[in-house]
Length: 399
Ligand code: PGA
Ligand code: ZN
Image (cartoon, rainbow, N blue to C red; front, side, top):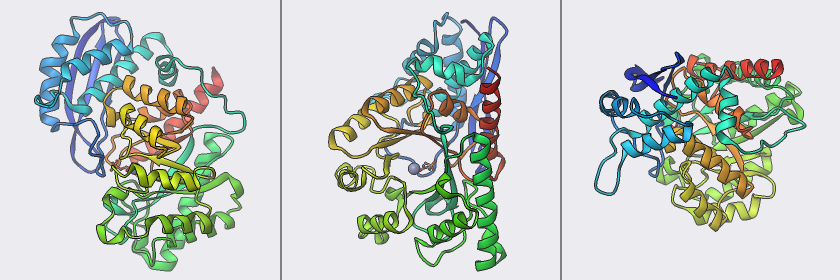
């Protein structure tokens, strides 16, 4: 696969911040583009990004001239070149940054899929190269929808960042309907209880009014799930994003989680402690790991070295995989392979600053992740991922 042109330009993300979009054309005529999301509650160990303007300039000068000289065997060889050009060490700064490497990496994968005439998720599966888990009873990934926003993603009084509804329908269509119904009911209930401003949303499309306590969102969502007779098709979870919880609100976290688990049947807990607190994670996983998923995000940053440490210390039994945390498709697939070897659940995830790029849906389906975090069914950049999953379902049925 030889690249005829590779060009980057600035586009906006969902917070109105500049990010990078990269277009690739192969000599065989295939053309594709991809853009990079950007986080706000980012982990310190994430692969570094550089400002969009510098990332774009270096992609157009440095990367495009290097890439034009190589005949690439596969995704791994293209991604290896990205890492080589990116460079980076204790002394030298990276030259592309994770947004530029990811945008180029995904654009290349899309161009390859197009060359072969297969859907993108199939190309993800081919690059993954491992046997896929066969999920007999349900469509996976399950949808992890962030229906109430707090922390750094909203201007309200919630210290915890995300209140998640997890839909386990038999199809993506059914899961999407479950989330959309619950989301609308929740909006109505919040308006009734708190006034018309309660339907205003945060960065990931979840509602963001003030609440009387950290557990009130769970109480309301549990009541509505019962009213809608969702039964065991819906579960609840939380991304505490504890590194960004204000210091004063960090006392007795373990006890509070235990109460959420007991009272609301919480099935999923992400980043319950700070990003270096491997030991505190381990104590919680020791206690509750038999019944619920405890996931690392800022703790593990899609980085196999940090994942190996989390395994050694028994910190988690699930992991968030965000391709832009590590910078290429190949490295994100390495993280999935490691997680599967460790017996962990895999939850692929968008970022709080998103574009309309829907790659993460193909990634999640391509490796049959257990979950996909995609925000609430609101705002175009979130809806793009739901709608792509619905399209994938149709493509898979037609195959
Ligand atoms: P971020 O948050 O995209 O702002 O980092 C998402 C998360 O913590 O899962
Ligand atoms: Zn998180």
